[in-house]
Image (cartoon, rainbow, N blue to C red; front, top):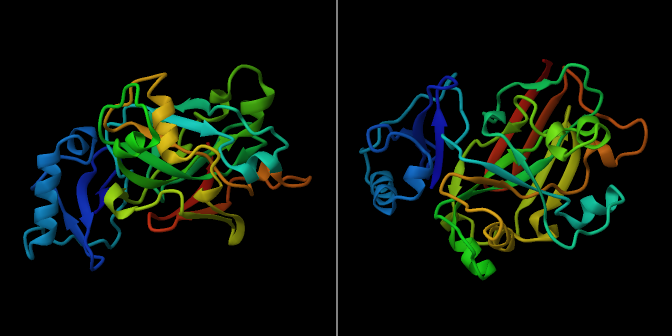
Length: 286
């Protein structure tokens, strides 16, 4: 299923994109797309049954309708740094022996076509197309990567916007450059795991002002999705509705020759993970 949330920011309602591409209202079936829903097998079964029954879910007019983040009440966003062989190479970094972790606050999440704000004084705002993993079952001390995959509810396209000066040159942790407002567009859809048979075979692409900048594949991940979930479960409990941003392929501004083409107000970024939908953001000054 392709689950999404539509409407004004803070007042989104649950919806579904059916097999014919028609937007359907889910608000009569479930109150929201969130961790409670993803952890409730009977509620998900009701959604599937309604989606398969003609005429049960009313159609929505998508004209002018904002698409919000596909997941509400996100618990935590755990991010994996330097998780692609080609991205590590372009930045001159060594391949990490274990996953590099940092966090994004849930309030960085915006819709896939919402405005991204360039922080005041920023000189090095950068782009990163990523595969986002959404947890559907509580994960603690998992033993295998297969168990990790079994705890995934679905996948989404994410944009891990980053300010490299804040991240690298200002001391402390990476979190400084990762948590500016609007720095995590998510969506348009949450695609349930049954529709993504191999999360290690997904092309990812990103364009800046129409120019292709990133063209990669999740096959390049150093730590694949199942292993990432397993690994994280030994350092923290993962709950339904938690999100994992799994890293970005080569092609970020930081990896380009000087002068590096960092983002500025007025730029337009478009990105996609194949099968998970496309985003488009116009950048403005904060």
